[in-house]
Amino acid sequence: MPKKLIIANWKLNPTTIKDAKKLASLISVKAKNKVVLCPPAVYLSQINYPNLGAQDCFWQDKGAYTGQVSPLQLKDLKIKYCIIGHSELRAIGENDSMINFKLRTLLQHKIIPVLCVGFGTTVEQEDMEVVDVLRAQLEAGLKDVDASKIVVAYEPVWAIGTGKTATPEHAEKIGIFIKAKYGIKTVLYGGSVNASNAREFLQQRNVGGLLVGGASLIAKEFNQIINI
Image 1 (cartoon, rainbow, N blue to C red):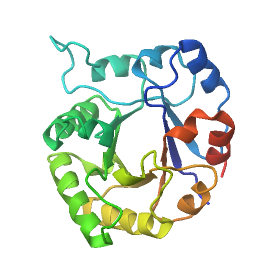
Image 2: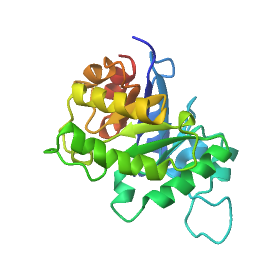
Image 3: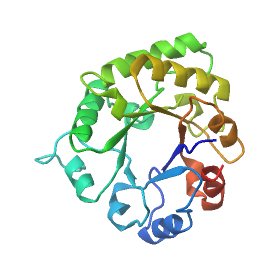
């Protein structure tokens, strides 16, 4: 099985730099897959790991934008990836236009955006209904953007943190659609990924990797996932 991209989204965890450094130190740097750690922004400058990513950024380089993180600040820290459009941010008001601004700014500074789609989907929807939701998000988010330089993470919102996942076969179909329709090279799956189900997703040809939440906070379990 070829190397795949596995991204750890620590979200608002842990709550001390001591714990963040300890967690990072326990994660393998010689995994069988490519690994990116995305700790909280306040820890980015102090985490030592080959590939680091941010959980979000603003679309302006500098200015009167209290509390925001600039792509230039990320670039200065040699951050290589940035998650954009996560459902938890969409749920509190982030829209596709804002996401598009962020994507364009990140690409301008040569940081790889990881565009999350899947907010608004439901467990009851058929594949084509899911595709309709994703199409709207992708067409708006990718406007005037070179899609070949972006990673897309398909995260059905109903699967995030619930212990429920889409089927690997469904993730494969979505991967095929996104790659063929938009020229995306890498499509990840995210949503309650753990050491027990990760292998089935990684075995799918058009699932290029995983976006892992809760399981990435447990070093032993995450090491199992990244070494599949």
